[in-house]
Length: 124
Image (cartoon, rainbow, N blue to C red; front, side):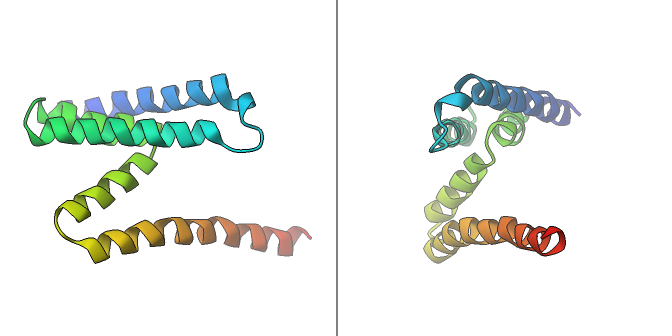
């Protein structure tokens, strides 16, 4: 129960941090979403750090999961994408990692584009 509570609380904190960064820097990147890029990089760094500390048992497992799933998940889901890719590479699953690295953004773009095409068809 403590782990679930930490995930929830740290998830809310991650979402609020993401929102705060977007609000603070959002108007500075009209042409290129540099804020989102920075959030993704920082989120990946935090996720890698938490993963490393957890791997060496330098923090309680409930805090480890709370930070990874909760905070990092709320702050930047890209951090999970980066960390999972790294973990596959560490396990020698190069083909799987590269497939995942390519498939996620390509399929994600398609998944975002298809509803737009449908809406254009429906609403003209």
